[in-house]
Length: 116
Length: 113
Image (cartoon, rainbow over all chains, first blue to last red; front, side):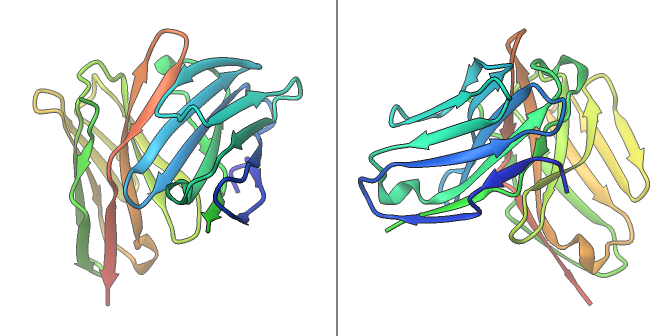
């Protein structure tokens, strides 16, 4: 158990809908990262937040957005869903923002999103 | 480009050594990582190596880094059935205040009896 929790575990929805994925980081971790794992794209970095502020952006679509709240949990919002958005969405957390100290990222179990 | 490449599949017999290879792209990466993903589970960090090291050993795991060729390998000694999983290498790209992990395509390790 990494200490990172994600809810829900599974989510099935229809095209055009909007969903929210939730992540609670490890106690004391200030950074939250979101990743998408799909069969065709592999594991891709989406976005990073540090202490409530956006710090880095990866291959995140404009239909997707995220935020980190004062209690440090994070939500990833996916809207106007398409079939191709079906994937496993991982959240990770780390103590710091920069990787210069080899800051380890701890991964949650993921949310499996199926868009029908 | 930011592609980190790995072979897709490796099959070994229980008790043999496994070697999983990775070619990364960013020569400025300060750390390189190996993650393990078991079926239906998240990613677990196995080990990492700092870019100024050539080798790091941690029990059954040995990481070799050839910075000139941007080649990273993970050797698992005495491979067990519990080692069956997908293994991802990853490089970290720092922008000073943020860090981003770029993952390889993953190598599925199958351990046979």
